[in-house]
Image (cartoon, rainbow, N blue to C red; front, side, top):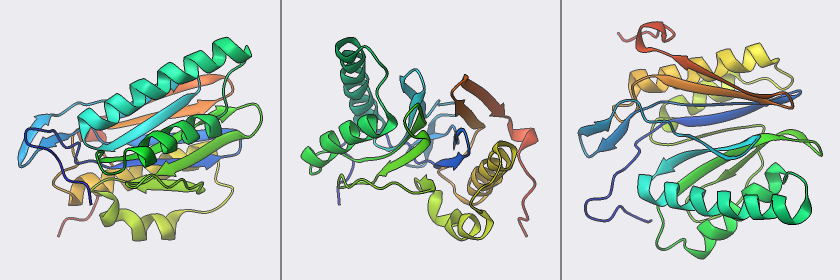
Length: 212
């Protein structure tokens, strides 16, 4: 298993994405941790790589930022050469190729999500090691182990956009409550053919959770 290098910053995070008919909802907390020290309380872990394609980053902040920058460069090149926007699958395949070829040197678990005219809303997951998966919803990061049961129980195929937003808010909010490495605010993005709608859920607006 890849470990962080000396001085490297760990996102220590909760990220997720879920599909609905017509688009996707992506969400993440905003805490960046360096061991037990909170290096940044308001990180934006939802990274734009194309007009309607985003990635959610967990693992090493440096590694995931570098991989996202490389993929963005290649997607811009793709658009120039082909005269059309790349699909979400093309973007995910680029992430997967880079992560797999450098699997012994990277600490990166990435969720790629967005909308394209061929498939509509699409979600891909590239865990550490560089494999590629296409789930209906994806969760990752240190907080994901606290919410996997909740997500399995709460997710239903065919949920509406509003239901997916609430699902994401509740899942990430629960992770923030339970996981010491997740915190801050919840950043959400709803991606459809009409564009990207960004939302922020502040600490005093987080869904109420039982804490004992």
